[in-house]
Length: 113
Image 1 (tube, rainbow, N blue to C red):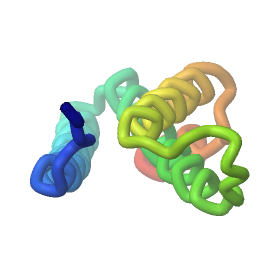
Image 2: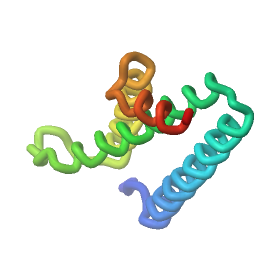
Image 3: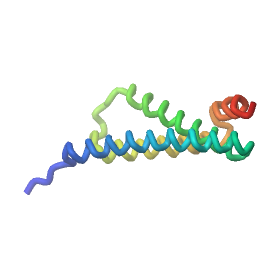
Image 4: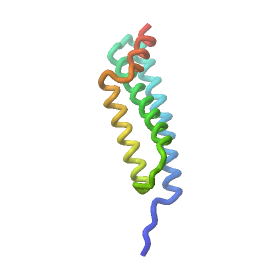
């Protein structure tokens, strides 16, 4: 009895879910920024800027990962890709918690005006 991997319909659903998640995150970020600016809430604005920096760094890491040549040492699988996505998302959040890349500070200064 052979058990096959994930079907293409599941992978299409997963890709569609990722696209929808990205759109929701964009709308959520815009709403948070708008509300923080209207309420003059500096903490909410700082948090939103940190969230944007985390999101941006995650996208940068994802694109960087695509540029790494495949060595064949590890087998490519959907599970491995999901794990790596989660790992880079955690890296992005940790980086933006601390000093970060400076994006959140510059964005905050621009939006605070």
